[in-house]
Image (cartoon, rainbow, N blue to C red; front, side, top):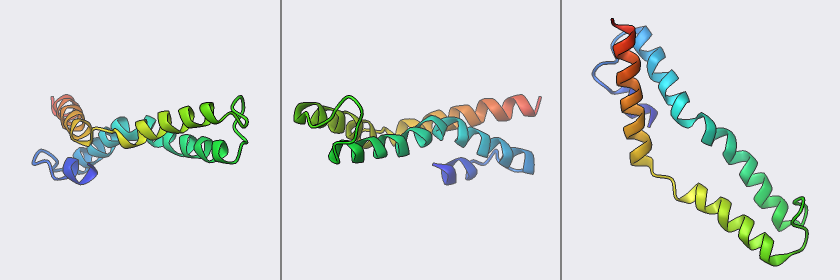
Length: 96
């Protein structure tokens, strides 16, 4: 996604590159922070260390399936689309 943002023909100056990185951060930040936490929680479920889950196989399965679903079911095309929209908005504002 970052390469797609940086390849945008409107990204010409250093300020535009900064806008591209800021846009990338906006689109990926929350997910990027959530992923390691979710992965750790999944690992803790496997090891019976997850708080409130313990050795309850039904809860373990549910927790793992829920988090794996969020990890695997990401719509990359939509994230790229949102990044292009955000970049356009950010660049329009900086060149006025």
